[in-house]
Image (cartoon, rainbow over all chains, first blue to last red; front, side, top):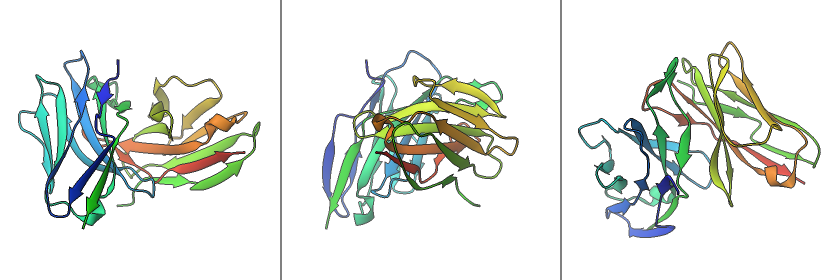
Length: 120
Length: 111
């Protein structure tokens, strides 16, 4: 079974509108973290937002917010006021387990991504 | 603060050759992890190093190896290259529990 599922291969949104990118995950570990990354055509993976499984509040970073529904195992990314520069591939990723010896565990499992296109 | 630096950015090799990729982490980051990205398989975890020790390893053949130096810089090596090794290789470094920053990647083409 896939651990991270992104069901939207592609999404379109008008400039200045909000858009939600879906992500569901599967884990039996009570301690995990969820990441969202943006990958423009240049290839660099840009960190957007992080949500820990024990965090009480939904994470927010500027125009990005994470709609974390733990019981439903979903971690949707909401982008408000879309801009043309938001057009890119978006990946949801999960780290299972808490801190490893000597620090955090950085073995991430990625979804297949959603290609977002922002139209003027 | 400088970001994650990967070199080389682009390279072309032929089947059977070997390649070494380098990753310099953000200052103060001691964890370095490597990922392979291909159109067919997506992003897959290769391995992770912390304080010169391999902490995690993905499901890749032994031709893929890595190491980390005392200054936290990391290298990965792929020996006996195959056509299927053509990919974008991404390095990521982190420090806190919720931080993982990637470099721009090394794009390898195997002919």
